[in-house]
Image (cartoon, helix red, strand yellow):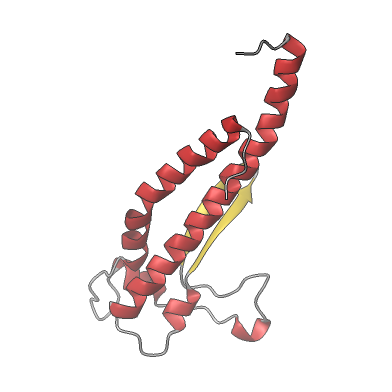
Length: 141
């Protein structure tokens, strides 16, 4: 076991912080895309696809708000910076399909919630792997 001086330890700890943030962001993005994929699969089978607009409106992403980063899984809004304006039509029935209700008393489908619940164990494992890789000085890939 090698010994580190306090200044060497501080330097390594500073290097580790940047790697940790990068590794966690990568793990979050991978899992946002996993959730998006699972939700699109859920929205393909139940509710049954007619036009594909609901499925196409599902988006998993990592967003920064103030000092924190969040993994977001959403549906209904196609408006996004990387999509052309012609595709920016909101799917107003997305919430009713997810949570139920409306004038036709639609049963909730929970296509987003089921996707999240399916991916969460993998997300937790990936976060642990990202931290372990950071302490090993390796990138999370």
